[in-house]
Each structure stands twice: as C-alpha cells, then as structure tokens.
Length: 181
Image (cartoon, rainbow, N blue to C red; front, side, top):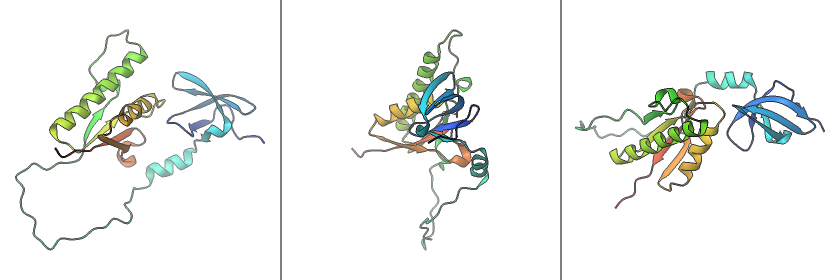
C-alpha cells in the first residue's frame, strides 16, 4: 500500500511537536527537513499539512461553547486592587532576549531560552500570578519540546496550548497551581 507523500510536501509529525518538508521518499521511509535537521519517519508517523485547512483555521473565530454564565443579582463592589488584564506573556524568541555572545551554539541558545522561561515562571509565582504565556514560535518544535519536558517535571504547573487566535501554534499557557500553606 502506497502513501501520498512526495518531495516538497509539508508534513506535521503525528506523535510529537514539529513539522517539516519532505526531501526524499524511499518506500515507507520519508526523509523530512525539520529546521536545520533531517530525520527519517515512517509514512504512518506523518500527516500532510493541508494549507487550505490551516488558512481556514486561522480565519475562523474561536468560540466558547457550553459556557455556563449566570448573572449575579448582587451589585458588584468597587475593588481597590488593580485589574489583572490577562496572563503575563514572555516572548522567548532570541531577538527578544538579552543577547548571547556571537559564537553561541544552537544548544547554548536553547539553554538561554529555557533559562528565561524558568525565570519568568519563578517571577510569576513570586508575584502570585495564576498564569503565564510562553511564546516559543513555530520553528522546528525543539524549544516547545524542551519547554514541555521542563514543565512536566513541575507538579505545581499545568500547561496547554495558548489561544490560537492570539498566538497561532506558537505559545504555551502555563497555569500556576498555588497550594495553600
């Protein structure tokens, strides 16, 4: 049974975060250029990236279904606390972070981004914020993968994709679970 992949197709990885361009097909083996690296996948581990569907998703407004809204009969009292406008956002793109030395390797750059993510989460915890958004961008998926590995190790955090409408596929929203003392 053949598969529909051809050289030049854009694909998304089925069991991991990332995407790339097909550069060769040999039987069921599909070689994909993902960022700076080439990897070989079995055809069943890949999904065609349908540009028409991606455009439709980007243009379709996000709706909240089954939201239980109950109006309160009680008047609201003015608050003396500043309003929270939403989660703090931390852009982890290298051009948004303090610069590294010119000869920094890709690994050093990744560690630099992860360090800033850790610091942002620690600062949000210190201030008592309930959420933070880490903007990792779309690229090869390496930074996102490493962020997820880091976040999984912390039982005090829960994470998920941030708003597609606001950030596309390039951000994670982290919920900081505060424990009572």
